[in-house]
Length: 396
Image: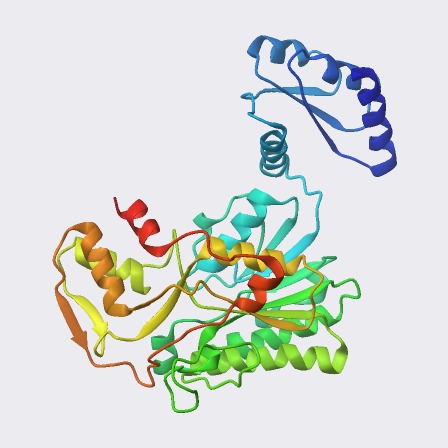
């Protein structure tokens, strides 16, 4: 049996130009037999025995690593893939260009891909105030560049583009909207032009927002309306209007040039490593430090919340799906007023809240809410993490 495996491995190396062979072994025989065929590839023997690891290192082309036993084959494969990617920089899947991957949601997506797939990530990020390189493993290829300046030549061959890059702080868009026009509109346009030069492009996946639909309590909509993918766009800020413009550019690139695309529109994301200026991290720190909690207006604005990991999984599912040229809402149906989120955090911390109601933001929408049934019907449930459960875990 082991001899047959060794022959098959040696043949595969020749036929498929394999660079790395990972050979889990308890006895050492599998790695030894593969070594006899002198394959033109490094053999990494994974063994739970230090003594056996030292012995295997004497065989031609074998590098032995002490490796804890796995509970099942699935875990063994998963850990082997992580080892191959992180320690040997191997990629056996498809190549994905990710823009804005040092931001909060983009970094969660990259980490999801790295931990759960064999795909290779090429990260492009301008490194603005919200970027955090510590969120990404060092093995990820990184190009520091404004997406307005990216060229097709420097990217080489790739299969997908996932466009997270965007200016997203609404307050900043009120103070100065020009950076939002440049990044969200001009930047998306440039990435579409880059994508059009790749004949092998499988899909351009553009990350949008629920804010493009506008205020669900606006007179435009019926009472208790929940945004659906076919609804019109009614953005209220320079942020949401530039995101809406980017959506239209993506759709136009398909209509005019046949560029294959998907657009995801998601609700408020939360999770680990979020920028400290964002709502939930800011509230947690304010209550912990016994300082006043700033809340816009009356605090009754309604938002839908999804963990960035759930969002990332849904995005990747869509990326690899056989769906094209469509829009998908990605939401959790878990909605709270801002006051309710503050009270939830206060209760978990066991501390009183010192509210500081401040003048409401210009053009502030009262309610966002997504109908994500299209995604759930086609691909299954989205949410696996509940906001309160996550807060209890990370706060306590």
